[in-house]
Length: 557
Ligand SMILES: Cc1cc2nc3c(=O)[nH]c(=O)nc-3n(C[C@H](O)[C@H](O)[C@H](O)COP(=O)(O)OP(=O)(O)OC[C@H]3O[C@@H](n4cnc5c(N)ncnc54)[C@H](O)[C@@H]3O)c2cc1C
Image (cartoon, rainbow, N blue to C red; front, top):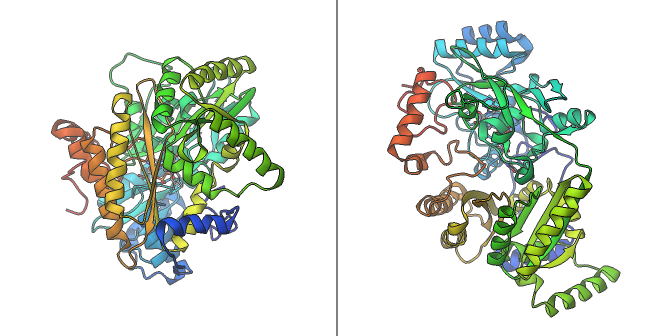
């Protein structure tokens, strides 16, 4: 499942060349899209990585020779196509530039170390020569995390060869995993032993354990299993001075938790080579159902009550009214018996004062023992019923599970047709939830203009609050796509920071959010973070230009 440089991977989109989004009813789909956005027209793109015009690798021959000595001749590449591929991630602006064949600041070499000692040797070489180093896991960053920044030569460390699950401790229910293991490979091995990590970001198929840890990622089932921060027990980090190995214990009162300092460090403190992660037994039973609530506000209240009642859903995904409406419009129109069943369903909902198109759909999933799933499902149902919800049965739950990794392919369809499509996210406390949601939605609508779609959902819930995740669409400004996106992104992020939301709930900071870090953390928080970076990476070689606000040390100076 490795998407790292592979001739079959869609460098201009998501997944492999033989994967595509299946639009169930194209007429209905395009009628909805054109009704909202106006006419669209196909946008051509560069067809081959070989057509990219890249500057030559700036890495001195001597450095290339030494990298080859460290990792072997076949593990170092300065090939143009490969350099283009490894220079951007999978954000909207990355894909726009890839489709134009435009990689203005390409990495200078890719090295694929075979073990931790080789990673360390590469880092030492880089620090000694003041070469920037970017760790690359699956390359699915949506915040510019793997893009070179600045003037000097850059080495990208591809973690693909550190791809082993080293040990499963059945008694402790933990696993020792190398950082380059990709999602599906990890789960395949764990399942054979009856375990799961329970970490399924939408990018699961093409992202790595090291990338998850480095970005403080959250999977779709984090409400039950925890986001990656909770799943990491210990880490090993290679940095120019040596290997940091944090103690492998379940809990400790031995000062601040160093492992948690590495979680979310985005490659700016070193390369995560290995981690011990906490596992769960494979669930005996899964039950995923859909509910219709009278409004998003009622759904948010239900989510809060469910979380605070101690009910532990694996998935609690609540679409706002706009997302509910568009997901209904984009599915295939039911035919025959299904159409008759839907008519009956709508009649039943109407009698309860509910309307599919103006309500708010919740997907509620439980996983665990037969008894736990039944007990939790009943407790949640009581809350939902009291708040005016109606059950839509298990088919929306099944449909969501079936298609949960497919949506990124739809982004390619929009981009092929000149439509800007992006997502952004935050989190806040329950008391501020609807106010912040309205502010961000209005900021997005204002920046996008009339011809646009802005929709949101809640997908990660806590006892004290939840995440808000937006998807937005608008016709692209032809030739000015990046500037258009920057205006929209700035309006939404200003609203998030001013409104007291998290600068990111799970996408991380990278380049994209970095300019807001100072406002978000405050002067003191920014100074702490900068000082930590400066102490651990005095040459400023580790993924420069990402995460750390106003960093003064840089290899380019
Ligand atoms: C379609 C799509 C859906 C997504 N869905 C989700 C989601 O549901 N939840 C979520 O949390 N995120 C999501 N993301 C964002 C992205 O997938 C995550 O940030 C993921 O954790 C990145 O993993 P990766 O292996 O691809 O890392 P990369 O993109 O390779 O790297 C990300 C960052 O981590 C650093 N890094 C990578 N490996 C290491 C390492 N071994 N040591 C140190 N630093 C390292 C990189 O330098 C970079 O700064 C999505 C992205 C896309 C494109």
